[in-house]
Length: 207
Image (cartoon, rainbow, N blue to C red; front, side, top):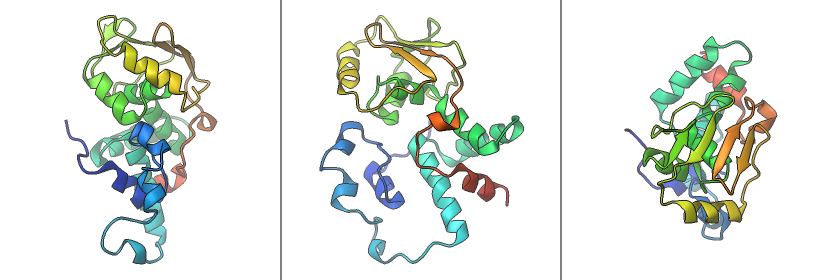
């Protein structure tokens, strides 16, 4: 399973904003953006003005990094979004939001999508009573996402839920006592609170 293995904080610095890739650390003074708010690398402080293509590319890179997917997988999501009815950009973000690792994070069970990915990959969650260990699994309306009874993550989930760093979106319903969440509806664009201009991604792939 391919994944990004280098320093996560470099990604936030490259995009110039917090992508919340490291959970609790992102809310402290140790966050790289707080300490070095400029792009990484030897010429980080001297980068020139972005071209129109560069602006589109940065939006695509930002979305990829927020959701923790690589280029080939991201392009596949775009192809699916393009084939669906409706606005392609919104379809793309909706597909990314419906990933199981993102849903675990949105429910407050994981401090970051990266942690949610790890929890799912290690088999700690079930969907509709069946174990699912694929982080990219797409949930549907009515699906019940729950911590498996045999999981040893009860204390960790309690810590994450009690931290309350993010508000559970309206398209999800959570029962923190049962460690369970329900997909009430498909997410709308207003429910997806990420700093990405999805139309620029569509323009980039449409060239």
